[in-house]
Length: 233
Image (cartoon, rainbow, N blue to C red; front, side):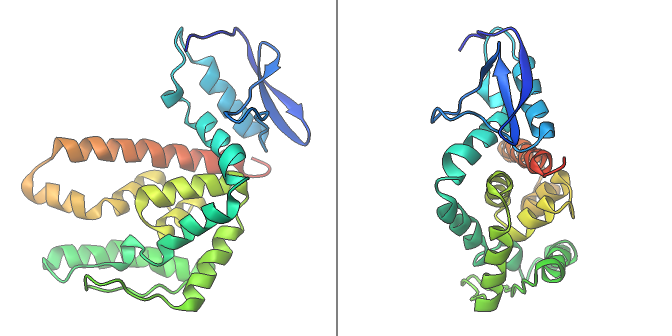
């Protein structure tokens, strides 16, 4: 789509902010006004629209994409979105370890276990780990604590949490990133620990590197979205 506007600005409206193009508020895919919770997020969206050239590239506008999803999807399907995020409490990647090779097993304990320990301290979520292939049965109390944590997120931050948790395969990493306990780069490193180990042993794989780059972009953008969407940001 060709660029059709000259000016972009953030405008206060209805206890939030909209973004206008030549004086007209941006609409979501479902034709809602793109109403944003903070000036920081509105300014981030403004910048995405300002830097577009003659052709608008939606893939270069992740904040706009997440805001659309928050308003059109999360707000109308909140229970379903919460359920999708909470499902990772039953199969969190950090809970599935190896017995061998020994150095990989040691790395998993050293790098993954601190995140589960943090999750226990921060949210009271006690997830059990296993070195077996079969699904480990997490306790009802742990899953209830996961749900309580996820339900505390508003629609905007829940949208970002959904993206990060899905990208990482881990609710522990999703919550840690949302709370600022780890950075986006740390989340990516932990989520791809086994693949990084394999490339250290056998050499780089271009397809794996390409996929990691895509994950980095998604995790970084979702992290930024959650930060900017915080009240008072």
